[in-house]
Length: 531
Image 1: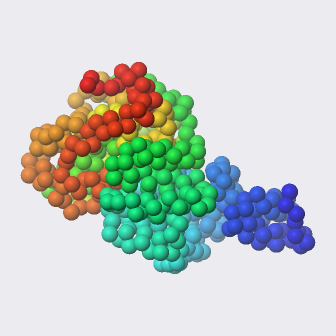
Image 2: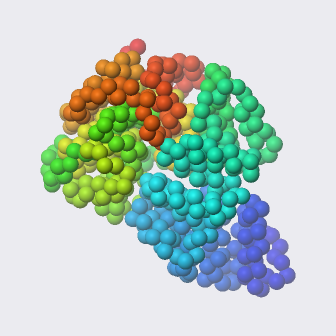
Image 3: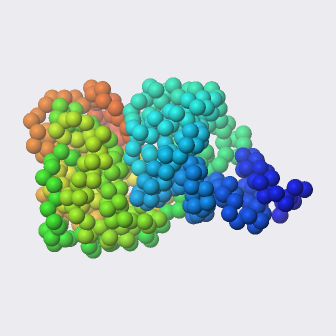
């Protein structure tokens, strides 16, 4: 127990001490001050706010949610609490409640505090509103230009929007202000291929000089691993990725049993009879959905398709899944769950389609067709078929060993919590593979399987097959997709500026020994191709 100051009869004095302790990283002292203050005045809103901030720092999401919710009841005009609540709810996929909290945060007069602006930007980006998020991140950075964290967050959002030159400027400024930002170094490593070890030598001291928080360790190790792989130092690279994955996995609450139950629920309930019994959807053929595993070639195929003069690239849109959550009034803590998909069985397909088109209106351009390439939309494939019976769906197929390695070496935001442990990742792939086979059998001819290896081996033939499936006239630009100037907003941004190549085919062989635990699981499940 921390000894209280002499004026502890005044709870607000305790809070001053508590906020100071939090800023110094002393979570135990901050929590003790909160406990004493709330013991004397349970309705003291700033104390609940501090509890929420401590919860964020310690990774106790449940405590943070409860604390920020308490602040919004006790002090509804507090924009910071609404903003943090919106971000937490968006992270958990509770988009209906997140929408309400976000509106409240935006409407409060005190929402111009830099930290509040920044958190609103985060909430918007989690909801897929990246263009709107940019303005809030920029306002935070402009309000406090000497804060490197705000510049890093703006840069991250700019990279997603494909504004890489502007992002680099922000990252350079952030590192001048705070050279210890591991996230800035990681983002910078992803913008171009390493030519030597100079940047690696800048990053390593972050891990050696002082104990970094787990999140910082993950950023640093993944930055080092990425550049070591660029330099073809294969074993060193895998070791770095392993260290980064270990740090990242320790920050995540991944429930593999619930994921398995979710996939089982999908397979049980979403049958051909379910689809034939649905009310009519929309006769709109503008969406083109590209689905599959991350790093399976979805960005390559998107670039081929959007090189066509009739197709706009809308990026990885969260709006379809969020529409399912909104219309079912889903309030579960998990982004995906049996509860979500069982509750969505009775959704009106046309209402779902209208919600999706309305919420993507600013993102899908003014061309006749647009691409939504969010990989895990394969989970919503039956709903896509119901809502948009004329829409085209392209499913990427790639060697599971290459997919698993490519996923393992990538540090994602929040979407793929299974990807930081070789066993969890391989078992996830098996579930995905089996679900796609189920969809293939139940909905024959309703989506196109595109094999990554075949496309990169013969781009002209692969591109022609894809464009023919989309019922579009051939354009040579689709073969020469790498000459496009349009933005690319995913982890493959650097690669797709180059012509298609086969260098990434069978890349897993460089790591066959290290990947053995995953390969054994894939082999036992019978999902490996016949070599």
